[in-house]
Length: 319
Image (cartoon, rainbow, N blue to C red; front, side, top):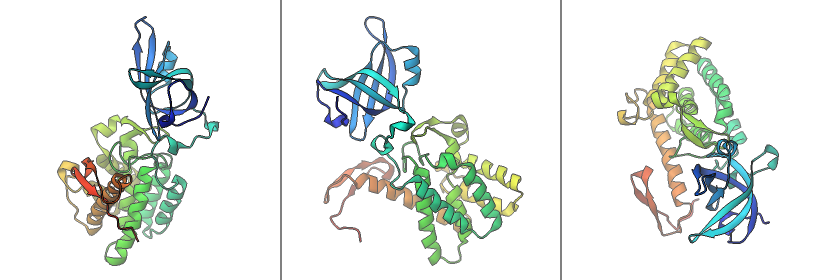
């Protein structure tokens, strides 16, 4: 038995390794026995696998977006390689898995990003804003450490929302050195809270993989959920009503256009900046992702989130 990545598999080998289940479907064979038809992935690719003669327990346990350890045989079927599973189990905490081998993650550790976030919270001088932000961040900490910023689009990676927030805070910090009339406390709070309700809009597992949107997320969406959250927390803490109103305005307007979920456009400078900082960080993430595997002097594939543009990778190096 050998431990290899999927792109190294060859027919006739016996392999033993960890995989992420991308899809799993229970089917019935010609002899009327149930089996699981599974797509397994790692960072190098994917392979079809079969768990023959499965039972109800197997069907409920080995589902999409779960990590498993498998031992089996690599066979060739209709010109494609396939893994015939002999043994399978769920991953244990003491397996010491490197999640980056199976799911995309933020380029910085979640613990580091969270400490950076708290550093920005500590810089807020307005006591009411600081109370509201501190309460919400502490309440949402567990999810914030692992959740992506989206199911499919920008920052759809483990700890992606936290990475997105910290990157935006760094941009906002520098912008307020230029536009000194902007209220830095309000801008920081808007950045921290603008997408915070995505943690309740989406349903994700500990790998940061979103399985679906929650019922509340589908019926309300994260902008409405965020405003409700601000209302609940400010009522609980007894903070200033106008401060709460400004924070809700930041959340309400950050998508800018009605067709993207914002019924009003920004009416304060901090909300205007929030929108554009959000756009900058989202688009730069998508551009960097699109170009990371493109050779210099070549174009990327069309990028759906960037209006189907093909991006060009210059030979010039960053300085």
